[in-house]
Length: 425
Image (cartoon, rainbow, N blue to C red; front, side):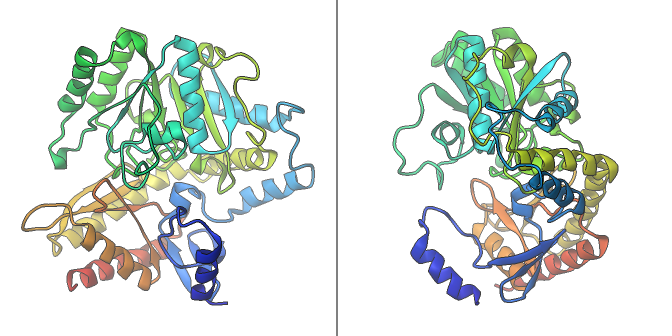
């Protein structure tokens, strides 16, 4: 089979609404390497969008799933429960930042986790309103799409969004938006349009993912916490992309001196199997009546087995420290590249959640064209990169945290060559 042949079949069989960044069809993968159906080998700096933080086919994750396969694949937890579900919930309750007792529910996707977090906040407070941030990404369901602060491609043409969802600016120093601007946006919202007594939740990403890998400044997070405490609002940290060692902590919120009331997570939780979770203060999580939360596939036994194994791998292989080490080395190499690349406008991100932003060196305007050339040049040389950002001018680096040093060094050489080739046009 050839990639081009399968891609034609895909075009004929699958809705064009499902986007496709490459025309590469994966055949097998191991840790940070992927081979396509033609036998071409790639270094994977996408990791399924921060899903396989522990690498493709980590042997301990595979062993845990294989063992569970020999027992059963599904009962629906609401019909016949199973102990590993309880054990993983206990572990997340202990690991998620914040004081006091916590409880957890398992669902299937990050968007579903966000939906359920909003449901919990609304039923616990008896309020309808939700505040989110420009540039945010919270999913493609109607509530997730409504919370997402990016029109193209997520909102365009899909009609009216969910009511009682409000957006304020997110700090982006490089684009002239400060923490003061963001907090003032909430203050103005409360003065002009929205009674804070109607607000159930404020939701934010500790590092915006799709929005461009902009970290939330500490004073913003403290400001959100203060507003929530003042007005009885639930603070929700969306850790779907930042979770599970990616930022150098198990959860990105560990880097702040305040905690959220509810945390959503998915992606890196189960090493490639579909599993998501919502963990929050026990009194909030217990506000819903029995049957109000859950789902047929929520907490599938195979995903639960993988999730427990992933937590073991992160702890035993010290992946939080590894993420900080790799991120530091990546930033150092990017700074070296920056010396000969005036198109690099910014290098940022905690741990191994690093991004580089490109802009026209003359006008300082975001340069999506140059960014895409870098991606394509890297791909042609065997390195898979992802772009992001409201302007499409950011490359985000999301390699497995388990990537071997030799493959990381090889990827850095490819990246440098790709940037140089992109400069030549």
